[in-house]
Image 1 (tube, rainbow, N blue to C red):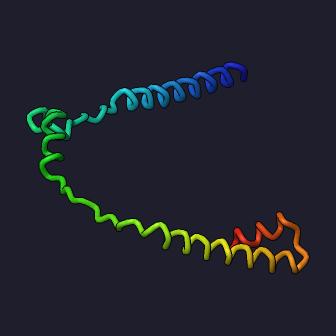
Image 2: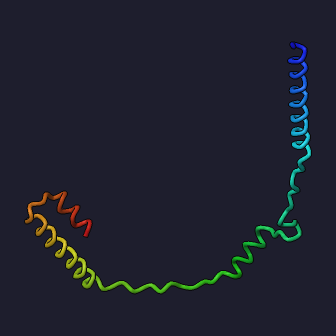
Image 3: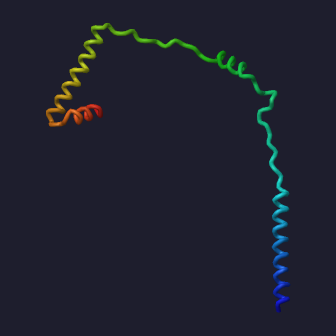
Length: 109
């Protein structure tokens, strides 16, 4: 009986070796895909040519800048903003908020 067990073991081992050999053969058989260059050297341009093309096709224009207001008008406008802020801050303080809380509320507004 031992001979039959050994014979059965060798048959199984031989079958495993054949299966592994087929897988190894298949792995070696796979061909690496060929890498193609999508940009042939004849179509590539130098950096100077590219920058020259970009400079030639760019659109240039001057931005229209509004003239500054007269200093008196600026002072009145800024003074109005400051008066509104002080009024809102005093209102927040009248509600019993601390300085930090009042400033936090005004920042959210």
